[in-house]
Amino acid sequence: MKKLFILFLLLFAVTQNYSQGKNSETRKFIENAEITQINRDWNIKAEFKSGLSDIVSFFPIEVIDLKSNRKVKSLQLDITLKYHANNNNFKSSWIDLNEVDEFIIFLEQYVIPNLKDKTEQNQSTTYVFNSKEIMFSFKIQNSSRRISIYLKDDGVIDYENYFWTETQVGKIPELLKMLKEIK
Image 1 (cartoon, rainbow, N blue to C red):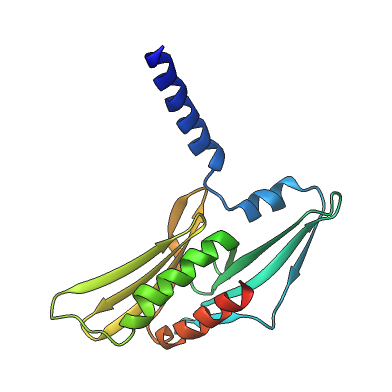
Image 2 (spheres, rainbow, N blue to C red):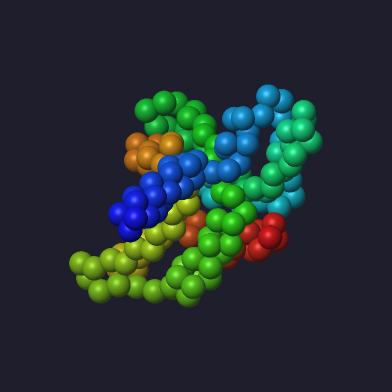
């Protein structure tokens, strides 16, 4: 009986983990609805630009399944990469609102307090936030700082098409403010 119970728990854990999936609830909602409406609020936006004219934008959205009238609110992230292998590469990802809470905590506790930090010669410190569809990295090396944003496809990080900037690190507090506004 005890072995059967342990087998049941193991099977339940594997099923729960598999059913959670590797994509955001927002992506699943959009993919499963036959007809959707996506409302974007361009008044609440945080944007970073690189020296290569790459752009990443964060903004709130509301997705409506027009058949069932169900609604989902989320944070959309658009990346436009101008000079990568695929010219004018454009991708969108979503961060569910429960992940936005974690992103806010990450920025408040680990990034904002360290915006002015430096490391010793030949040392670096990197803070990484992982959601289902993005990886946000803040790296400090000597006196330079860098933001890198990678999108994920089914949980797999796309290391070839990503956004990074060193000149826009000072705009992180604007991103934090925007995230708090949508919550």
